[in-house]
Each structure stands twice: as structure tokens, then as C-alpha cells.
Image (tube, rainbow, N blue to C red; front, side):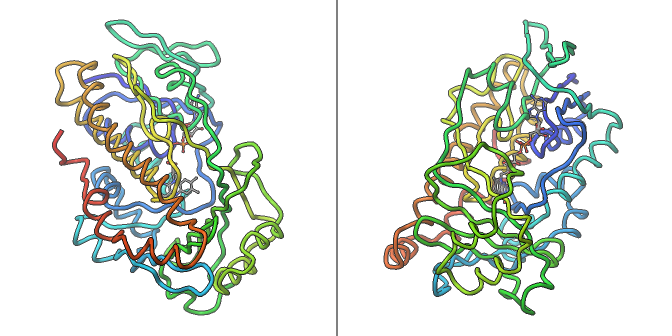
Amino acid sequence: MARILIAGAGIAGLTAAGCLLLAGHEVEIYEQAPELGEIGAGIQQSANATHVMRHLGVLDALEEMAFLPPVTEFRLFDNGEVLQALALAATHKERHGAPYLQLHRADYHAVLAARIEALDPGCIRLNATAAGFRENRDGVTLLLADGSAIAGDVLIGADGIKSAVRRQIAGENRPHYTGDSAWRLTVPVERLPPGFLDAKSSIWVGPGKHAVIYFLRGGSLLNFVGAVELEEEIEESWTQKRPWTELKADFDGWHPDILTIIEAADRDACFRWPLNVHPHLDRWSTARATLVGDAAHPMLPYMAQGAAVAAEDGAILTRTLAGAGSVPEALALYEAHRKPRARRVVDESRDNRRLFHLPDEAALRAAFAGRNLDRERSDWLYNYNPLTVDL
Ligand SMILES: Cc1cc2nc3c(=O)[nH]c(=O)nc-3n(C[C@H](O)[C@H](O)[C@H](O)COP(=O)(O)OP(=O)(O)OC[C@H]3O[C@@H](n4cnc5c(N)ncnc54)[C@H](O)[C@@H]3O)c2cc1C
């Protein structure tokens, strides 16, 4: 069994840690923040991720605090016409063997962190910023910003979109602004009309912007993400508040249901941040260090897959370490297996920007009429089980 060092305790780092601990490895996680946590917004996890959550022993706890939507509807921005629907709830579980969950990020992260603590108390080190690493034939040394050096057999960079580990593996890889910024807010459902949207989740598509709406915490909280094309953007930050009046102006002329949500929002809790992406990486790994999650494959959130693909990464990396003859072979196999799939998810998420933001109703209707998103995603995205897929 190997001694494995992980930089970053986000969803990717914690999921990888859980899979590796269950496989019998020694794991230490180095997290830069002074405390663990996630932002107050929603996250969706499809079967390709929830298989892994079942394996980690946290699926029941997550299901209890989640919302299981009956369906996601794609709707026109102004008149609400349903263009297409994805069957979720029982259908998703039957087709793919695991549920589709809509979760509060803080709940999701807390459940994962508690599970890691239970598996190996004290393995998460806080206030520990990865600055780089050294490696030789026999091992790898993680170098922290405070000057300490920790020796291990494998280093996993799970340190997110600005990854220090990636910089060393793949060189400088500057993010670029996609042209879209995302509003995010949550609204307690008691502020909304009874039976609002029949608790369905929905993606409202329109010229130059779209809105994603779904429910959390057993249906008690509504999550809203509004992606808008904006030429100029402020510095990347998930905690950047913007005036409510800007949000209202951005969705001027949209359907009354969208305006109802905006009216019910806390005026001083409307956040907006720029969506950045990176070019595809040519390499994810050296002989002893590799990447998972946003460090490896940041993507637009337009298929709700960033964290789901991160969960797949941890499960596959654990399997390749078990099956290969050496660490370098395991990391090479991991990268070879993961890269094409992650690229596809990144590219299709990016392509959805075009689909969701077409300039008028006629173009949107025609584009959706030519697609069957339910079948497409079932065929290749949701039916991938990282615990059993051929390597
Ligand atoms: C609007 C929006 C909606 C989304 N919706 C979904 C969704 O519905 N479903 C889905 O699957 N995905 C979704 N995503 C994507 C998802 O949020 C990310 O892919 C996921 O959170 C990435 O997790 P991560 O652990 O790789 O990175 P992060 O969450 O960024 O975690 C990285 C961790 O590493 C730490 N760190 C950073 N640098 C260092 C360092 N040098 N040393 C030590 N620690 C470090 C950070 O503090 C952090 O704890 C969405 C994204 C956005 C923007």
C-alpha cells in the first residue's frame, strides 16, 4: 500500500481520499484554508458520481439531505414553453443504478469530510498550502508554502482551478474568461407561491443567457444560477456580491416565474462570478504526481458535471493504483483512461453555451427539436460507473 499526499480538500480531494483510504492506502490531505467548508449554493450529482458516494458509505446520508427532482425541463425564457425534458428521480435510478441528487454544497462537503475523518481521524491538515513538489524514482516530496516538506509515494493535485500542482506538471496554463458570468442565489420556498414550479428543476434558455433552477434540502430551498454574457468581468471570486438591481436588469423581460424568484431574493445576497476555463492539458501526470477535479479539467457548469467527473477521477485512480505494477504505470493508465472522457465532458459543456444562448425563440426551438438530450446523456454520460467500467 502507498503513502498518498493530496493537495486540496474540496470535493475532488475528499472523494479521492475516501476511495484510497477504503483501498487500504495511507492518506494525508493538505488544505490551504484555515477551516473546511463550501459556499452556500446548490450542486447536482448524477449516477456517475453517486455510485462513488454509495461506495464511500455516504449515499444514504446524502439522499436524506438532498432533493430528488422528478424531471429537468428545458424551457423558453419568455413564455416558459417546454422544449425538452430529462427524466430523473426513479427513471434515472432505474436506468443507471444510482440516484440523481440535488444537494446544498455545504451539506455535501460536510458529509464527505466527516466520512474521511471517521476513516482516518486527523488526516486532513488545515492551513497547509501546497507550493510545489520534488520527485525521484523512489518517491515524491510535497513542498508547502511554509517551507515544510512531506515525503510520500504519490502526490495528487486536487487544488482546484488555480492548482499549484498543475503548474508544475503542465506549466503555466492561464484561465481565460469565457464571456459568461454566473449569478447565484438561494431562496427559502416559503417566500414563493405554494407548489412553485411543481418542484421540477428547469433550465430556461434565452438570447445570451440562461437560468438553472432547482430545489435543495428536501425541497425547502430553491437554488438559482443565472449565466449571463458580459463583456467585462471583475476578478474571479465566488463571494463577490453584486447589486440586486443588476440581477433584475439582466433578466428583464423573462418569464414571470423567473421574476418571482428574483423578487424573493435577499437584496444583499446576490453573488456573481466570472466563469473561466483553461485550455485542455497535454499532460496530467508525472511519474509520481497527478491531478483530479478542477485542477485537471475545469469546465463550464453547463452540464452540472465538474464535481461528478471529479468523483469519477478518485475512483478510477484508486483502481489503477490497485491494478498496475508500479506507481508510474498506474498514473499513466489513469491519465490515459480519464483524459478522453473528461475532454468530452468539458467540450460538451462548452457547446451547451451555444445551444442555451441562441438569439431567438425560433433558433432555440429548432436547435432543441434536433436533439434528444435525455437519450444522449443517458447513453454516454450518466451510464458510466467508475467502479466497474473497463480500464
Ligand atoms: C455555477 C456553478 C455550478 C456548478 N454546478 C455543478 C453541479 O451541479 N454539479 C457538478 O458536478 N459540478 C458543478 N459545478 C462544478 C463544481 O463546483 C466543481 O467542478 C468542483 O467543485 C471542483 O471541485 P475541486 O475539489 O476539484 O475544486 P475546489 O472545489 O476548487 O477545491 C479545491 C480545494 O483546494 C484548496 N486549495 C487550492 N489551492 C491549494 C493549495 N495550493 N494548497 C492546498 N490547498 C489548496 C482549496 O482551498 C479548495 O479547498 C459547478 C460550478 C459552478 C461554477
